[in-house]
Length: 238
Image (tube, rainbow, N blue to C red; front, side, top):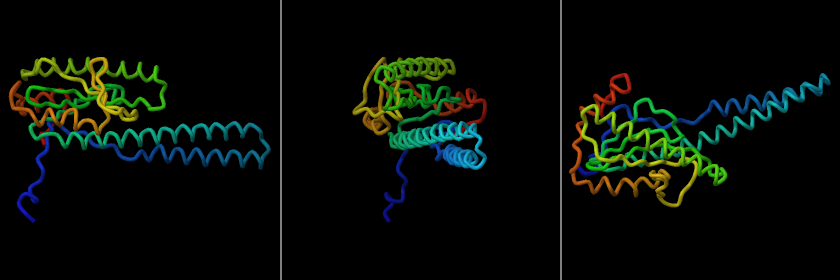
């Protein structure tokens, strides 16, 4: 094995505690099975006891089992997209600094989740779990609200970092990662990019790899201090 094969590939640095990929939502699967078993039990008791009202409870258990199954598969789809998102971030240039947003709010609805800092250019990433089956008009409204929310939170984060004495660029670009709605290519709408996880390599990868080191200087120590203060607990750089 050569020295280059032994040396791990350079990765971007995380400041703070990196987000973890979600696991399989077994709880919802268990609830679906439990409700399905309860439905069969009620229907069986109805035949044995001839109490008609037990049919109602059996049907309600069936409805609940269907809703639990839908939630299980939704979380499974979102979890897979979030894993692909984290993998795409790990493939960015070593010159990139990744900062998880402390105490992220409105996850899945356009809330800011990760700051991507390259020399001279910053992005704020959020996710949106609008379904591909949603009607175009309804999906458009949801995406517009998510884009507006992400841009507003990105500006708030920029102001917070500037207040902590960290040099910030003139603009923080918003990137909305769609976890359930495919798009053929990055789309710029309402001031925010709409992408799927696999598009991040094209949208961010080229820009971060071409970074020349000019622009606002970012001190990992300052970022660490800001993150720890905002999160309300000690963080770490990785």
